[in-house]
Amino acid sequence: MGPGEDEQNATDHSTVYVHNPHLEKMKEDILYHFNLGTSTHDLPATFGDVKFVCVGGSPWRMKSFIEYIAAELALEDPKSEYPNICAGTDRYAMYKVGPVLSVSHGMGIPSISIMLHELIKLLHHAGCTDVTIIRIGTSGGIGLEPGTIVLTKQSVDANFLPKFEQVILGKTVVRSTDLDLGLAEELLQCSKDLSQFETVIGNTMCTMDFYEGQARLDGAFCSYSEKDKQEYLTKAYDAGVCNIEMESSVFAAMCKLSGLRAAVVCVTLLDRLKGDQLTSSHEVLHSYQQRPQILVGHFIKKLMCASAKN
Image (cartoon, rainbow, N blue to C red; front, side):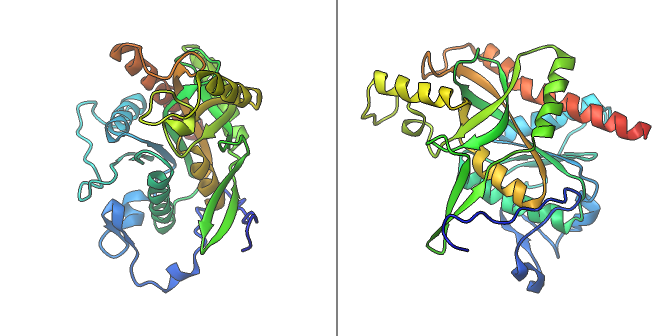
């Protein structure tokens, strides 16, 4: 593949695709960072029923989510313990209840990319079909009230372009960062049903850094002025950017390649036009962080109830 060419995307959402002929020749596939493998674990028996995957940066948050969704779906006793399936490694945490898988991905593009390679292979080896994957997390908003949820339409780079670039064998490969707009609209309707918090659909800027890459003035290094920062963030706002985080571009690209129906659901913790540091109380920030899981929990419950009736 030449520089700048976009790879062909999987369009059939029923199957989880891998695009690697070398996997067929391997006697065993070791998912090293999950501490799982095709010969040491019965992946279809454990994961074959998965229909919903939720991923987020913090292991604690993803355990909290699985406890929340178990209670919402009345799948298990609320006092049940949910063991970390990846307990043999300290890289990621994974929890499961019924058809819902909850996985941590760490912070930034490299960390979530490694996790997604192994997650996509896991779902493929397990024979999972019709999987929906949702990233739930936090972000900095632009021109939005803190606590607003942003459903990502497109992930854009620091130049506000909807693409993810990766250097492979010395050549730049460009991949699309479009997400499933139909899924975003379904989630928006769920927010309207709940009527608990503001939710919008918009573009998300994905950066390689939390400080200079996001035009913060409070890092260890800063070579620009407050005016420079405001001009840049205003340009981002004018380009349709509603929030900023550090994982959505590779998430969108890899999910699209594998045929996964995907969404990014991030709450804004502050308005970056008004400041860089989090000044809200711990209690307020905690309540904000619960909003994505409340929304996604309602969405999953709605779909499972509809499926049970059919």
